[in-house]
Length: 270
Image 1 (tube, rainbow, N blue to C red):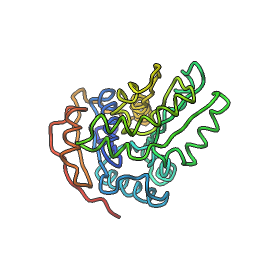
Image 2: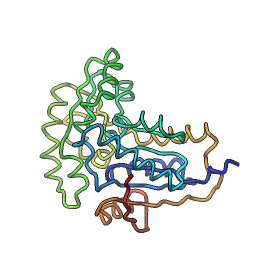
Image 3: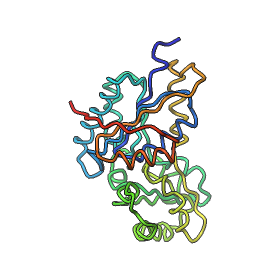
Image 4: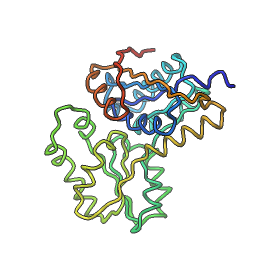
């Protein structure tokens, strides 16, 4: 028995978007325990510089390690693009990042014309641009659009369907003009409005959310290092936030992962 196998898995995002990853992990690895941080006090990450995001991610990862995490899931595309390589160099435990589901989108697309809806930061990041270049020869076209403001609408308790439609429609129209048949969601938040996005297309478009793939990668990495929990009982979930969004986070966690506890406010600093 590995002495760390029953330690928690740390998961974090700049807000509630990473709950989609947590939900997938709970479905795939229910006997594991989880520490989830919504770093809402520093949200959104996407309007900050690379160096600021990198420093903040390292701070949050360090905090989770101090809390005893055996593995870290950076459940945010922006944070992954800015800091996953540095974190893997600094810390010895498994660190799993996320990226837009571009590879599976290109693979399953019949027309080989695919789209990516992401944050502006992700679309402009070197990591994403390198991925597009790698896949360019396997597709006829890749249309990548940043969607400023969508994260904020998703996190708001008061967003209406009309507001979502008004923001999303111009992007959907661009994807339709490009003739895509497959759309990758390049932000963990966007999975919460997958149905609304799909409904705006006039013709059926396959929408790819990578939460399940990430959960499988977490399992693979833990198994490779003999860190999978050996207990058959369900693990625990602890939700933490650096911001003032306790009610929003608690309500969404209750709906997505049947979380019935409280959300603990924390401070994460050097």
